[in-house]
Image 1: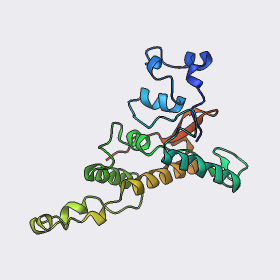
Image 2: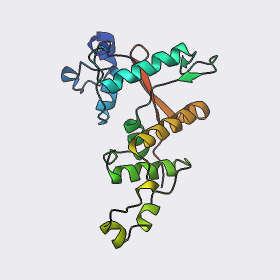
Image 3: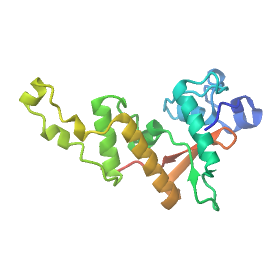
Length: 194
């Protein structure tokens, strides 16, 4: 993970992109973010300076720096035992669904993502059990069984773990987006089948 290095301003990069792109208004973002936007996937835009980045993004930069200090190498590295990569949870769920997922912070979005993980053979609780435990009494007394549904943060961590699993065991089922200079993200390639 790195800041926006202005790759979209370079002519050699622009020639690789779709001629029908909206590059004019999207020039101030990383190439990976542009490529996701071209697919319809909205992700946070990375500024060109760590100083102007939001706090959560600064924490991400710091995490990557600490992993480097601990001897982790950027994936893929054939000789490195410890590796890391950048994964974008929303984009991974989008790719697995084949369309835009429901909003991630909502109950229905969380249920949907948990079903997706289950269909991808992740060992997660069956999200549909949530509905079996809803009764009129529980609804009236605010006792919904939300403990059966993972939080948005947990679901993003699980989709990142699933992507790491695919990268290490089935690389042909992943795609990479972006450029090494600014950062590449890895995503599960194939939509899940119900």
